[in-house]
Structure formats: C-alpha cells, structure tokens
Amino acid sequence: MVEALCWETQSKIHVSYAKNDRRLSCFCPDERCLARVYPKTVKNTYFYAENGHITGCSNEAESHADPLQPGKPKPKPSEVPQQPIPNWLGEPPRPQRRLPPSKEQLIALARSAKAAPPLYTGTMAEIVDAWLAMPDTEQAAHPLTVNGRQLNYQSAFSYLRYLQNDINRLHCDDYIIYGDAEVSRGKSCYFLSSIKRFAFNGVSLPLRLDAPIRKPWPSDVTDYVGQRVVFFWHGDLPAINAKQTAYQLTQPDDTRCRGLIIRPDRSL
Image (tube, rainbow, N blue to C red; front, side, top):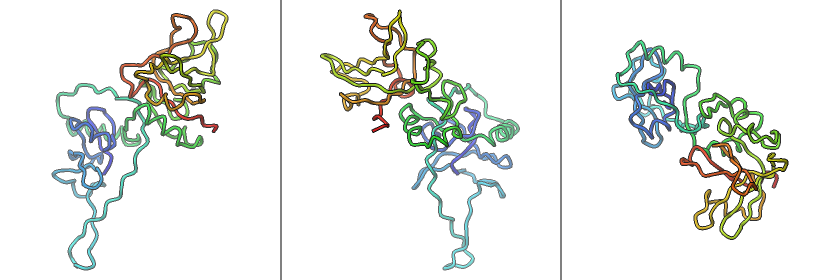
C-alpha cells in the first residue's frame, strides 16, 4: 500500500512523501476501513496498519497457499512501488487541524480524493528533470501544481522564445520559464545570459545571472563556461540592474523550490 489519505493535506499522499514527515495523520483510503496507517521500510517503503485492515478492505494483506506446507498461508511477495512523478512544486499549505478527524470526515475525504492522484512533492530540480525525461505527448496528462495553480507538465512550462519581449508579461512566479542561454566567465563572476531579449527604453536586454566566482550559485554553472545551455527559472520577476545592462536574476532564499536550474543544450 503506497497511497493513503492525509488529514493535514486533505488529499491522498504517496508514502515517499509521508516518510519524510511522521507528523502527518494518514489513513487507509478504503472508506469501509479507514484504519490509521504509518510509513514503514523493510526492503521498500509502504504504509502499514498497526491493528490491521478490516476484512474485505481492498488494502488488506493478501496471501497464497504454500505448496510445500499445505494449509499454511504464505505472504504474497510485495511488488516494488514505482517512483511517482512529482505533482506539486514545493510544500503544499497545511491548515492547522488540532482535533483528530471523525469517521464521517474521513469518509468524505476518501470520496473527494478517490479520483485524484496522490500528492507527491518535488524540488525545482526534480520537476525539471521529470519534465526533460517525459515525452511531449505525455506532458498534458501529468498534473503539476505551481504556486497554488493547478497546471500540468505542459502548461506549467513556458518557453521564452514564444513569449513577448515585455518583461512584465513573464509571469515567472506562476510558471517555470525556460530558454536558451550562454555562460561566460568574467573577472569576479560567471555570467549566464539569455538569448531571448526583453525591451527596456528602446533597447533589448537579456535576463542575466551573476554568480560570484568564489561562491557560485548554482554551483554547476562552472561546468558550462563557454557553452550554450537551457536554463529554467521560477521566482521573482527579474528587475533591471544598476547599470541598466540586463534584467537581473537573483538567488532566492529557498533554492529547492525557486530559482535557477541549468541543463545542457538539448540540441546537442
């Protein structure tokens, strides 16, 4: 059993998410059962019910007869759960719920969450890599929530080449923007400059990241000096720098769910 109801998130969640936060209250999603469950790791990580599931529950442990010992059940071997595709960038909001749920509340939650995929969060890097590995024909079928907006792996990513050159229409806080860029090295910084330009006072300026050589961020920018790359940005709208030579990308406080990801040029 790798999916369970979660009272705090008001959704189904995957066990890989639950194992990282043991404070979550999780329950069997079969509305006939609703047993309290906990993540447990033996060879793989699964939800288990300390007091067992009710008879007839769809998540009740199955067994088959052991031909070497007639009459004695043998546990059915467990299948290795597939690693889910992240469907939420960052951490979802968790309303404070001081009282444990009633049976009626759990039944209502089980019914509302029945058709939805289990919540599985991902970092910026994990979601970018999932997108890169996903065929274009499958992107629309995989949901992805970004900044509270329910999107999918097709609609959540915006290619800079197809956007207008008005910086105020970038909407990089609601979507993940991506585009081509070049990486170079200066005296004190590494520079990542977008190929796409945006208008400013009659000229066209790139998006640019200045990464100090002594402590570059992201650290892998040093691997791409002299190369063209694809960069992904989710965060604050870039502002014009003091010299008015570029729209500056700045490092966010939390770089797991916001900021810049660099990957090799996909055309190579």
